[in-house]
Image 1 (tube, protein in one colour):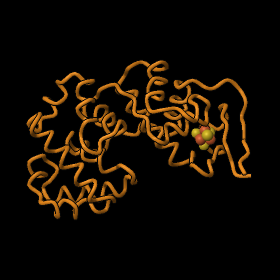
Image 2: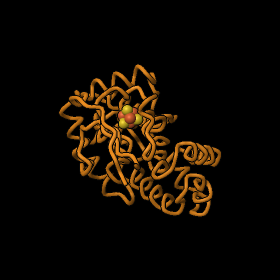
Image 3: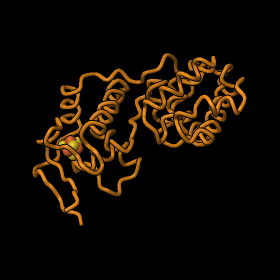
Length: 229
Ligand code: SF4
């Protein structure tokens, strides 16, 4: 059975939440990658796994000389699957990454400069048309590889914003983006930091089953938590 824990009051604004998180955690320095291609590969690898596993896969790709588009495409399927095995779902992810790398080389000659010269709504549409790239991955690529001001909405974002009564439980990805668009200036540096901070608070405090609101830097702001009675 579920019951609710409630801190009453008017929902805090996104700006207040951002400032609190930044004060508590400091700048997060995202995205930890040495090149746009590495960042984009990481965005696919991080689907449904944690970052530590992605780092292990990235290190193996680096050793194989596959963190450049041509080197990446030179890997045989089995070699690629072996390299990215630590990131989980390695067969699916290998397929996704090959589709992405082929598109990147064919359409943009493996050049981030060329890629990000394309108007971003068009680029987003192209990314969403690739195998296995959904809105969160596409927007991560736009924001962290291209400094495009699109707000990334992931599971942590939805959880924190829902619990702080800024989004309804049935909110869609687009609703999360519209909330950010209404509440914040279109600023890539701000979106970059905010997303990373939401991941930080989600990992440390805002757990799905047992959120630690007492220790959380947002704990005194109005929120509602469903807990097992
Ligand atoms: S742990 Fe509690 S206070 Fe912290 S973000 Fe989640 S709901 Fe808010």
